Image (cartoon, rainbow, N blue to C red; front, side, top):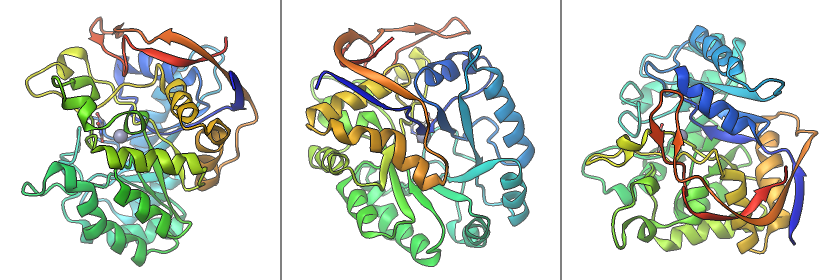
Length: 344
Ligand code: DOR
Ligand code: ZN
């Protein structure tokens, strides 16, 4: 197959950031995605209904002329989130709330350090029909970074989904065979997003022959057996797995640094790289479900009525981009060849 037309895809997990960064990130995503779930880990985080509404307006204002792109808004959970915060955020248009274990990743210091205290909040979310989006990693210092996702499943994920069978839970950016197996075994109210980097790469790609900081993200890339489990499950077309890029921009000097930030800025090439993966898997017929249908169905939103066409054609992803503030950023796979392209 050298060309494929699919319903316009959505990105069910990304980081637009804020301020002048929106002039870069919103158009880059709106070029091919109709909707995107906007993560709330701003500084300060999006913790109230008013902050949800204001952030939505700032994203909408950054859309290119004539764009119909729509952000899907989320609330950032903290130890002090109240039931009323959930009710108000839902009324303000937030479809989901994000659980970051405190310290798990970028701008998550204000997040949840006492998970049990949040169970009444999960109960309210279940009642309100609000989705729970989970960054599934434990943060205890003594737990090896490569084991943190599996530990989270064993310590927390299992009891959350058992306690709230009607709560829709998205296990975000899964990276392990353990997570794949967990989601497959769970009820239809449990699903997962998968990023392009975790389908394309494993930890050898990041660490053998030199450290590649632009491949560093959280949860960190795992060993090959886990990458293969992710690839295998998307190739089956299972409706519980859908597209979430976790596109997360950090300026070049924050990545190429003695203590580099976690995140891959993939908005410039994500749908093309997913197409490349599905082609490699001989599963291009499953791309539309993954990219354009399963996520909308899980969120209870209509599928998009427009379409995009991808062609099998090599192009080079820009090695560097200049942000609105004048600073450079290296997009994910910058300078590398991508085998699929959006048709103009
Ligand atoms: O690599 C990551 N970057 N993982 C996350 O969970 C957060 C993100 C960011 O905000 O930079
Ligand atoms: Zn993320």
